[in-house]
Image (cartoon, rainbow, N blue to C red):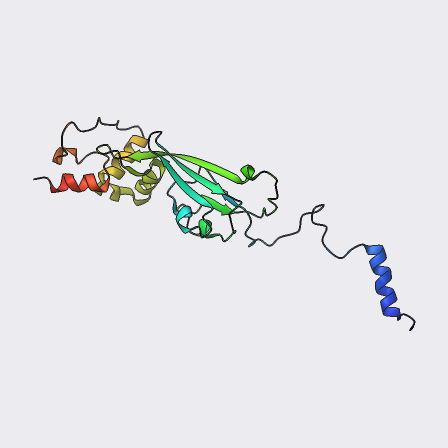
Length: 197
């Protein structure tokens, strides 16, 4: 057997005194680059409940449930299904509702801890009760387009109700007519008020 070379002996001594070369992950966090995509964080204050994140999620990790009786839209985020693709952040209409974090260590024995829920108030048609969308989403659109919201009575009235300037009207007593145009209506009912002679 050959005698060890000096270089190999030097490497052996360095390994003995300096410790292992690999990262000690559980004891110390691994440094991550800024562009790392970890757990998505849904900010309840910035989210308007539009559902864009649920529409673009390839893994089905985000779901939308509308409870019409309670008047609530639930956005359910299942982090156990998430593939950290970042589509929810890229397609968020407010650009602040979803942010990818650097948190990647989500190991747990209880799957219920990997579910988050955001609740938003629904905006329903005053005539037929159909869901128009989340109230925050409609008022966000009205603020975003500014004076152009005067062209759509639903946007205008929802924004004014949000500011406390107008109240809600009782449902129409009979069939819809031209006088019902200034109501919060779904597109189908709005079409009926436009076509009435």
